[in-house]
Length: 207
Image (cartoon, rainbow, N blue to C red):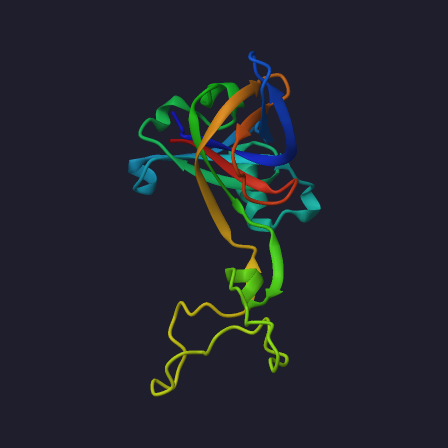
């Protein structure tokens, strides 16, 4: 069985428990995904299943991908991802995999996505620096970061926490709990921080 599926972040809501308490959750539209290719040890050197998600108009699909989808005999998809598996023989091209086939309630999952972009940010916003003291005599230095470091090296060492591009990076959050699954609407309710913006692409996998 493949470990996960492709989905899209829908938004947040809350679920009321039997004892009257509520839990904040993020809704993810998971699948249905279509198998576009099955990779085996003999043909590709490793075993994996390639899934397609979210239909895409032909005019927006590149020629190489059009040929790939034509060979598989499936539709045209916006997103294609591979999932490693030891049992690729369980799937064949054209099969549809839905949320109920992979996930169960009250289990732990990990979610991969691209974080929200914040553009160019300073040291205080990007790294949580406290800034300089707002005392008498301080002029235009209140939000400036510290020194760039050693001067005899004639360069800035890698990993230096400085102002720069914030966000828009691949992020994985682990150990998120699945509270509810709606197989009719292909929705899964996850409690915990899910990376990305609304309608952002996410990959959700079992731990």
